[in-house]
Length: 81
Image 1 (cartoon, rainbow, N blue to C red):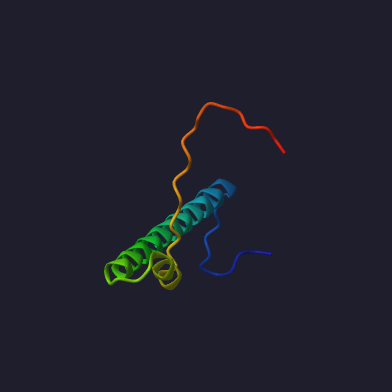
Image 2: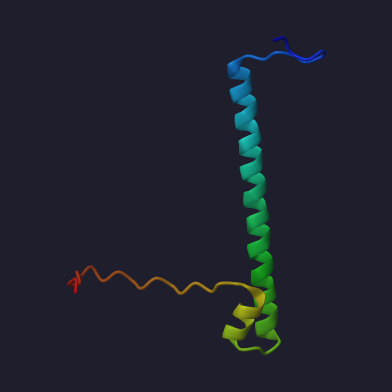
């Protein structure tokens, strides 16, 4: 079977390179959208706090997840229970 009229055959290497470029572009776009979404949620959260809402309510309304800071490492081991 021959390719359709006007189609250009490419090598497997060309296909792989083009496919990798599309995947990389998609991943970059998704990462940028994710960062923008998180930044927007953080800004909404901060504005709700400034408006006087309790932190828990501001987090719930904005969708912003406030991460608790990790406890400082003490260098001591704890026993497994």
